[in-house]
Amino acid sequence: MNFFFDYERRELADIFHPPFRAMQIYKSVYHRWFDDFELMTDLPKTSRTSFAEEWDIKLPAVHRRFDSADGTRRYLVRLSDGEFAETVFIPEEHRSTICISSQIGCALACTFCLTGQLGLTRHLSAGEIVSQVLVAQRDNLSWESRDSFNIVLMGMGEPLHNYDNVMKAIRILHDEHGLNMSMSRMTLSTAGLLPGIERLGNEPAIPNLAISLTGATNEKRNQLMPINRRYPIEELLDAVRRFPLKHRQRVTFEYVLLRGVTDAPQDALNLVKLLKDIRAKVNLIPLNEAEELGYKRPSDTAVERFQRVLIGHNISAFVRKNRGNDISAACGQLKKKWADEPQNVSFNH
Ligand code: SAH
Image 1 (cartoon, helix red, strand yellow):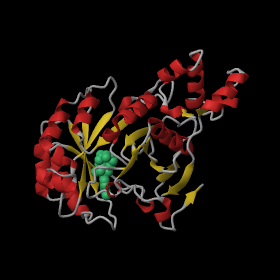
Image 2 (tube, protein in one colour):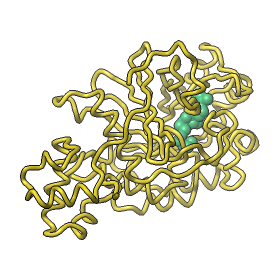
Image 3 (spheres, helix red, strand yellow):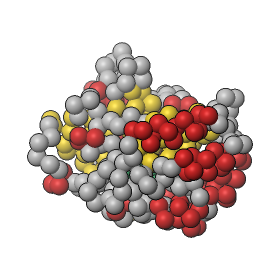
Image 4 (cartoon, helix red, strand yellow):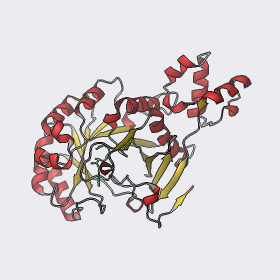
């Protein structure tokens, strides 16, 4: 069986005969949300049967859904080998956010991140990445509001470590005859895989770039994010300076605030120095605590003080709201299999 969501439209046009069948099926799947060839009455009956034998057009099942008091929902999407991709839907008034995973686990071992403790199990395929979006979209948005969301690659995994599948997924999501997501509505977040950033900058269509910085000196960043020993801050920021940006577009820097480690005014000043000639905006993320992590979240006062230093030096800085914390859906918390979940969470399915 071929998983339909793994394929770009132009690949399908080479596979299906006559080639216009590819377009018919593509629209049925992505626009009409059909998950059964029998519904595609514009295809000859015999083709419906033979396509159904070769092509899987069903979305993966939701194994569990965890609903947060603030409306955030976390999904365990069951993949063909029994692994789970974790996906988060974050409702917002105007435009919601769908946060998707690019890998099961992660190889980078950042010391403040729960996914980092898992190690890497495997990469996700393009279709496994695309279908997470479709699962969250169809479960949360009405037909009228079906396009009102952004996508962030900030779930489990390091997207640039799974470069080819991630870029293929982005192209499929971008396809004008599919979801038609514009590049400006998708954000790829990386811990700083420098060769991947350079490669991304040379793509014909480029999503927004977010860099997870967190340490503002090599000494600190080496401790927190081992990848920094391979690609230190100066080289990383040089690559960001070379990264092509559209008019008024900026690179987002995510900075996790860890009490007594990255939250001092001096850390903020170091960050100012690093970013002074970069078109940047900063997302400050107060640590989402977990027992397994040896760090604490700073006080609100420390967070505000840090933000004020950046703003005082003309750097846009926002504090990321903590969404879905009660269902382990917040940044850096994606880790646990359902068996480890506390019993008091609500879920459907
Ligand atoms: N590997 C990619 C994307 C996944 S992490 C990356 O590193 O960017 C998404 C964001 O969550 C990153 O900015 C990361 O720094 C942040 N994060 C990780 N653990 C966290 C935690 N415990 N609390 C708050 N943010 C965390």
